[in-house]
Length: 166
Image (cartoon, rainbow, N blue to C red; front, side, top):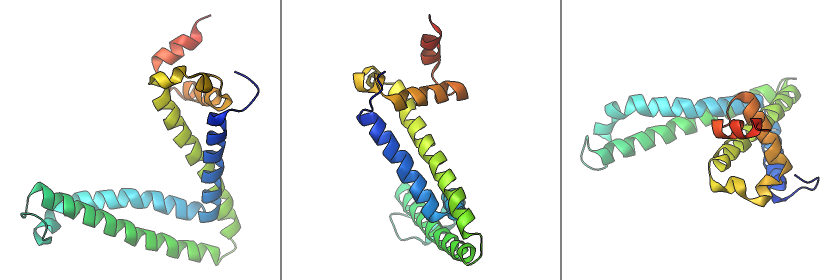
């Protein structure tokens, strides 16, 4: 590993900064509401598909196409409704004195989200031949992600074993 940053490091920094800025802009409450909205939309679609699908005129009622279209319709509708509720809550928070604190916590949430994205990318890379690329091997960010992955117990056992050899 060298002291210079390479392309991987620059991309990692951009991901972290972008996620942090988006988190600060949106605020913690909106970020958490958005995250919960994805789960709520999924569960609403799972539970509502069989009930609503006979009323959706796509394909033959009860067919896989009918169920898929109904699932997608319920999912998107629930996601939009939840998003509107999240925006309303954001407006209410910003109308109080908690707006700045919400944005600060949103930035921290965004940084954490960016780190999770980078850990996921690193997990994919370490399971492919890309891990042998010289640019990945020399990346300062990849080395940091490796330490975090091993520390959290997320690294593949082959990587941990390779690190423990003298």
